[in-house]
Amino acid sequence: MKRAIARSELDLMSVLWDQSGLAASAVHAKLPTDDGRSLQTIKTLLSRLVDKGALRAERDGRRFLYHPTLSRDDYAASATRRFSERLFGGRAAPIVAHLAEGDGLSDSDIAELEAIIRELKRRD
Image (cartoon, rainbow, N blue to C red; front, side, top):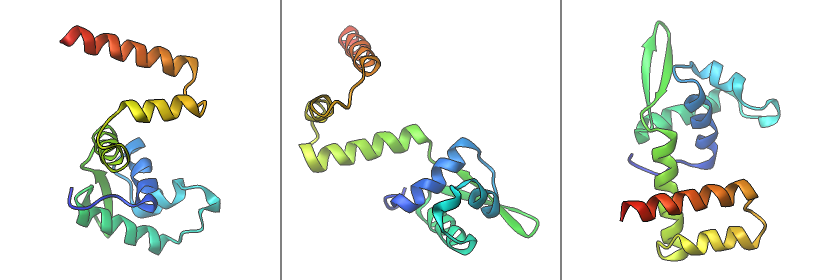
C-alpha cells in the first residue's frame, strides 16, 4: 500500500471488508445516517483508496464496484505495528499494560491473551 489509510477512509474500508463489490452509492447507504458525507465525498474517498492501492475498482456498466486489495487483518497488523513503533518503540508489552490499567481488558480478553502466550511459548 502506498500511503496510510485516513480515519474517514477507514469507515469505507470497513463497509467493503464486510461486503466486497459494492458501488459508491451502496457504500454511502451503509454508512450511519448521521455521517453527513455526501455521495460525491464518498466517491472521492473511494478514488483515494484506489490510488493508495487499498481498493481496486471494477467497471460495471456506468458505475464502478469496489473491492479491497488489503485484508482487514493485514491492515490491522500494519496499523498496530506503526502505532507500537511510534508510541512504544515497537514493544507490545506497554500497549497491553496500558489497556490493563485502564480497565480495557475484559476477562475474555485476558483469557484470549493467555491462550496466545501459551501458543507462542509452544512455538519456541
